[in-house]
Structures are given as C-alpha cells and as structure tokens.
Length: 467
Image (cartoon, rainbow, N blue to C red; front, side, top):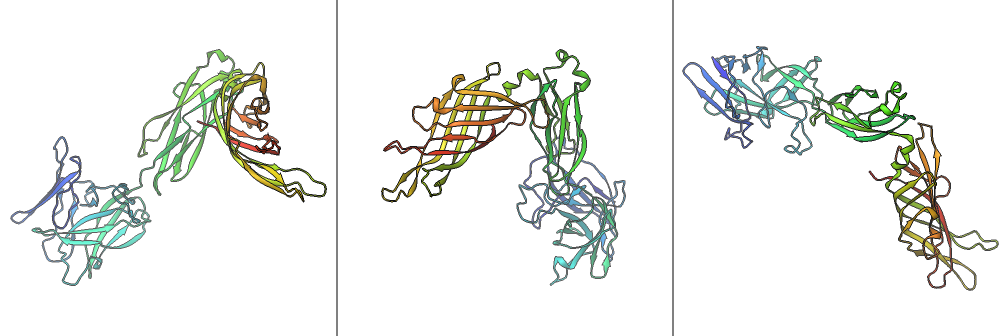
C-alpha cells in the first residue's frame, strides 16, 4: 500500500526547492519489496504530516496507471500538485504568483504521476495528452509539456497546462499515450481570488438636507474572479443602498449612504462621527474596511470649502480692434492653485491665496500697416486675498442632485501692483469637490513690459479640490 502526505514540485535533477520553510521542501520516492512507499513531506513549523492511503498502481507494463490519492473522500482524487510551489488542489487557472511568472502565458501548470509510461527514443512530451472533462461537460485535450521518469522509481511525472476556458469545480482527467488510456482521476478547479479597490474612505453628510453620499467598490482581481461584498452599519444610524452584491473582474458598484430619515427629527441625537463596514471575505486583500462619515449641520457646510483647490485655465488673448480688421487672438493657458483659509458666510467673504502660472500674451503692432503680433507673457504670481477683494455666495442649496455650491470671485486687479490681475471667478461644489466656470472664469491684462501697452485675455477655469 502507498502512503502520501503531500505531493510537491520536482525537477529533473533535484527534488529540493528554495522556497520558504512553510512551503513543501522535498519529494522522497523509495522502493520497498513488492510495494512502493511514496512520501511527500511538508516542512511546517509544527513538522506534522498528513497521511493517507494512495491507490497502488498496476505493476503490469500496461495500461497506464494514474496515481490516485485514496485518503479521500473522494477516493478517485488524483495525486496532483501545482507546478510552482507544489500546492495541492483546488487549482486556479491563472498563476496567482505573478511575481514569479512574468510571461505572457500565466496559466498554472499541474503535475500528475503515472506508472507504465516511459517515452521511447525520439518521442517527445507532446506525444502524451491529458484529457480533461470539466464540471460543464466540456472536453479538453491538452498536450503534455513535460514527461519524465523519476529516477529510481516506477513513477513518471507529467506536467500540463490548465486550459483557458475550463469551468470551475470538479474535473475528471485521464492520460493518453499511443492507444492507451489511463484510469480516471479527479481534481478541483477554483476561480481566482478577487481583489478589492475601495474609495473614498471618508465623507460628510449634511443634515437636514441628508443628501446621499457614495463610495465605489471595485473588483480589480484577475479575469474570472468574482468579488462578493456586504456593507453593514454597526451603529444603526445610516441607511445603506446597494449593500449586497457580486462583481465580476473589472466591475464596480456604487454604494449610497445617508442618515436614516426617521432619525432626522432630532438632529442633536445624531452621532458626530459614524461608519459602515465593507466585508469581502473572498478577496485576496481582505480585511474589514470601515468607511467613515461625519454628520454635520448644513450651516457648517462652508467649512468643507477650506483647503486647497487646483486646476487649469485656458482662453484667448485679444489684440486691438482696427476698423475692417478681425480682432487678432491667440490661445493662452496655465494652471491655478487656490488655498482657502477662512470662509465667512455671514459676510459672504473668504480669505486665502491664489497662485496663477502659465503663458499669456501681449501684442505689438506694425508701424506701417498695424499688423498685430502676439508675444508670450509670463504672469506667474501668488497673492493673498481677503474680504475686501473677494465675494463668496451660495449659488445652489437644497438640491441633492447638484450638491451645495458656492460662487467665489477674487478681484486680483485690486490686489497686485501691476495691471495684469487676474480677476478670477469659479463655482465650487462642497459635496463633490468639483470646480467649474459659470460664464467667464478669468479676465487679465497682459502687457508689454517695455511701453506698458495692455492686451485683454479671458477664458474658463476648471479644477477640483485636492484630497
């Protein structure tokens, strides 16, 4: 009778691996009188082995015998191991160790063992095939990649590639060589583990408006993986939409969260901070992830504007108008960074700094024909603003679809010492963090530093709040 603890990966010349001590270390195959003791050892910290009978192969020269692990159930389980670390089934189609297998073909390989099979001179591994019948009754005929006799034993190692479209679940396999077909054995194929991506991890709910806040769960795991998720509310203060679901690889789900409507009757009893928990127990990077929510009165929403906002500006610089001549223009663009330090909603003002960088343009004109020519003007500057040069208005409240919006105008012409400015105007969404132009976003006066002749530029500004 045969005894087996674990099957592990072998090589042509050595059965010792260089993996960590928790991984399989060696395969010892020895012949005893009339029988063969097959021992596959796992080196673990406990140094324990799991033993079980393995079906004895037929010693006759034919037919081919597939070695089975009969320690079961099931008792028709093939003695099979994965090809990289020597791990037993269930096997995944794609090799999970992408840091080991960097090639284009990342499908896992399976090692099985047979008796009564020794290639004749001139024969190659592809002369041996492995037939696979998956859980959906699909048949796959796979050519072996390696067929080699294990020295000093009656066993032959056969390595084959798991096919792409094989179904997960129980799979029956046989080995074919010439006109011989081995006894059947089974292995299990499992789907690859999903991987969770989740953002953002914190948001603020303003009451009594109680607009829905959202975060996104995405499965960034390998093809064929499915991410099952559950979102729970341990404190019982939040209403969660789309709280349970399954996501194939590459798919995402938007989770909606707001305060339970029945709790809005007494805002003083609501927690200041609360959270929901995202559970994805099958994910390769699984931990219980809390997503936090601050609950604030809507009167405090102006504080959400504080911090840094940034984006781009673009438009045109215009030259002088001459009768009968189209006004000359040239494109201009750059970047802006706004840091809001205080917001005073009672007086509709704010304070902070604005940084304006990029390339604008001034113009010169031909002495004889007045031909206009643009010249680059570098307006790079940072200036502080305060209530005397700033206006902050509520531009949209009470509509959860559009969010709580504020319109900020900064008159840089009242602040900087040169004529350039700029005058800056933008609408900021305190909920989404988006910043856009409503109408004209900036005006400026690029000028000729030689004679002070001014041009006029204008355009749009777009951006967002920096996390």
